[in-house]
Image (tube, rainbow, N blue to C red; front, side):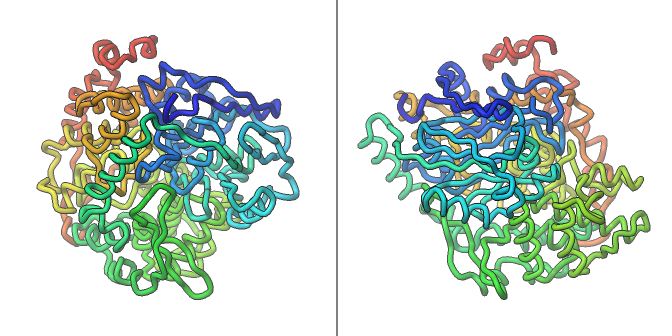
Length: 595
């Protein structure tokens, strides 16, 4: 199979046994790779209703068909499971070089099941798979020292995907790490790896990826690189990276500030792109990427990649922190401990708010740097105040009797775009398959970054959200990076080589809709429904007191109407269940039985 290895590696941790099976060719035809194949295998492997931290919850690593080729940005890995943070599906993405190395070793996917009797490390060298005891040597290590140790043992070319101390301690927003600064951040895949007594998967491969007509594929990819990748539309990635969004989003009144009390932060200028550019030392790129969006900065005593926009917003303005060095130190702690910075920042901001409201006595206050910097390690180890903060925003707020202070959807803390400054993002958060997420539908591009959308209106947003969700689903079969300007013409060139024929916009968007509806079926099976497609009360009805978005709210009635329209456009009933006609049209009828 050109572009595929044709192999799925199964790791049964309970039996400490590895086996290889053929990739399901029919599933590859319908769902392609990345997100699509990940969800199809997850649908098959996940025991319905299983606890996310139980052995019955598989952890799946999925490459895209273009990993290990010249295709720009397609080195990304899709990681999936049932999320311990939400109880919904989880697909999280990470760049770097792990996915190509997995392809070079001969595997399209890795399906990890069970729980090892004792902590283990899995080493993969082509067709050789070893289960190495991890207790006393690897278990307990932070992410950078772990990678350094494994590379000393396996060679400098080894690629490592690991969980940190937070995952070992089953923090539900623990992430997975690779290439030191790259994280599969959202939803708690690190906790799922930790629950399996698996410290890391390390891989070295000596194979290659076949692409059919190599000359034609190379010619087309290089043409796209010159005409569509290295262009003005993508120049922001290496000129400034995502920190440019700080002042843009703040200017729209949508930058979360002091636990979402307002959308305008007085210190935005001190934590944005201009401040970071003054201390930037270089830029780096993932494998297969000519854009190099990874900004490397020098702080006193250390050098790090980032912080990225989401960290600057949720760990900076949302915590009332305008000290850039402090945010970077917080970011570094999260990276080393294996914590999602977005959820960690949101939880710490919530704890600060609870303290200031008199609902908790954690000793945290907005702008208090010392206590703020101590929080990640306490969370990762579940010590002191960290024992409660490790619950996540939804459960922490409920514990303290203030659910109104938690800004989350389906249990996943909201990204750094306040919907009161960009209404369409609210509908995108509410309908996202993995909980609040800006990566499925990014209507802020229309509302804030130069589009023609009305930021304070939901008119037309249901259609926009559906289209963007379907497009993101098919793009993440590649798996392309969302930081690059993409359209179906660009994707179609690649799929044309994959399938050996021309493709159309309609065909690719149908694949995206198929993948999105498969995710809906999975979530419905796990007990989620319309009641979970919601927004926090404060976003619906509590306006900001100041800034550009002052006085604006999404509104419960307007949101309900927009959600109804979204369901109609999707071909779902009033409760969000796909109709038989919709499932039949998308070749999903056999998976919809029993709904």
